Length: 304
Ligand SMILES: [Zn+2]
Image (cartoon, rainbow, N blue to C red; front, side):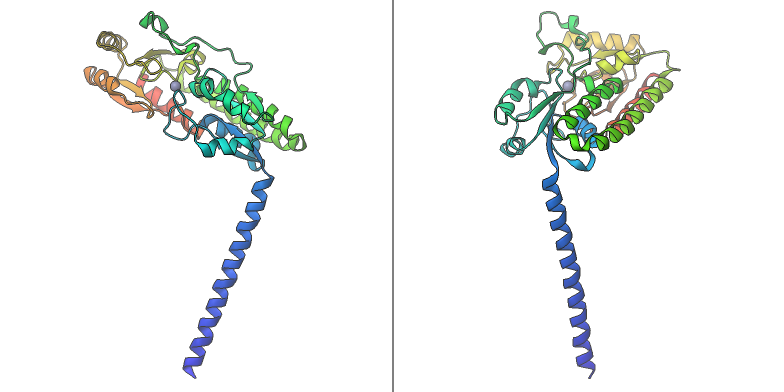
């Protein structure tokens, strides 16, 4: 008797397990069908993916060309990325002269001529790369303009608006949805801008030193001075390093900012010489607002 009860119990458990897995299977099938309804869109860098996700929400399926850890100045796309792009309805390029786009964008568009290309930099005034005169005669990878427009929240607002307009063009049926999302996100960016202004308002020594020059637009918008170690792939010479150490001492700099995409050997040399430390800020982090708040906190700590 006891044995039969046991068998029954096992049967019940087995049926429950089966039922649960059937439900799970059904659910995953449902998600998959939904995914095909989404609009295929592509962006170059991770912060743009955050903008795209914030406006496009559940309506978009995003392909990100530059994966975490890679440099947008040198990256080459993989075959699977090119396949994903062949189905995309829209490509949001940074548009400010990012190396990857200069080399690859025409080829990517050739492979999918129906894809709408949105220029996120439209309406943003490009500025020259800082420190250009320091290394006279050397040519920039991007010409003389600074491609890192997204690092200023004011520029981010324009980029978000450009992405919104592109989405409405490829998917006008969901305009109200995109509009609401855009407004919510723009509000967060406005708050971020105000918090940065407030946070930096009591700083008097407004000079900071970076390895990779990704903060030129940020520096301009918040009235800061950025001292550069590297210039888009060019390591400083021994004389440059000596000069930077002098400058760092003159401005009482204690922190050298570096980006995880680049090997900061020279940054280490300078930090050691001024008895300071290296702080990593990733200009390509996906969580844009969180990342800019980290930058703000680190800048305040470094300059106050
Ligand atoms: Zn860069």
